[in-house]
Figure 1 (spheres, rainbow, N blue to C red):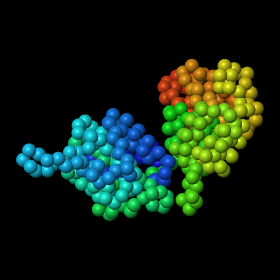
Figure 2: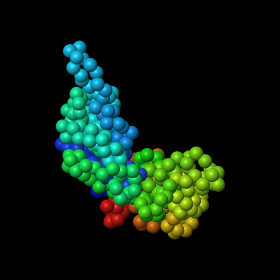
Figure 3: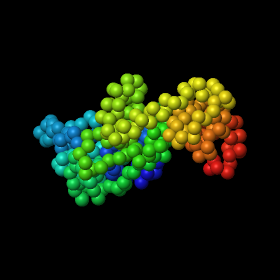
Figure 4: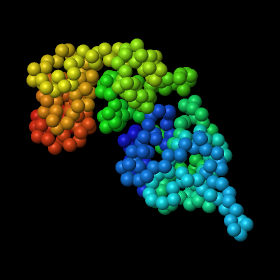
Length: 328
């Protein structure tokens, strides 16, 4: 299931009170989708890394009451009021005894003397056994307590997220150009660094931190692997052929397209889309009119993704009317 549907699925099952388990390879954004769902529903999120727990961490510590009987003091990370999502991340990487401690919490919504409040739902996530991550086979009794969803990542879903999160336009443009490198993980190879949505977000941060080409090349290789890094650093050289966004937007009528190189056009579209606002949109539509049709549509769509209020501007209404046959 693709990311944009996964968020809606999380919201649906949370409303239904049905525990959900998200399966997927490392680095594709499973935990991000759960956070987004919690924020969209205005619910608190308690993120528990099951891998780091011992069985006693969930049940709590025993205490002796005045009558000599023993009761349990639940841990303070378990919620006691309000509405939210209790997120058990990396659940199938936890030792079997920790998974067993989750049985009662997931199905009966209680463990020991603790009871999960009515406004809270359980969502869990983990990597698949075929991903060669640290996993323990989930007991069938626990697995049967969840609705299971396989998470897959697609470039358009990732771009939606990346534009909102301020990911560097060079990274977005490169992955538009080479979408196969958004997530390229081979579980049969023991690679320390490989391309994932998460590692490309790290690359974006690195771009903001250094302009030294030698350091940048080494850091990108250490983040997404040597092969993807070589392609990306080569792509950066293409991006540097473009004028600055400020220059483009201040001179939209005099700027001329240097060449219909797809790599350059992707870079141009993402550079301009990253600066989309009500003040710049008129210039963006004028530049779009000079581009090949498919890139003009890409530019306008990504500008709207960056700032959805642009659909109410006169510039967009006029542009959409003039391009009604292609802009659907």
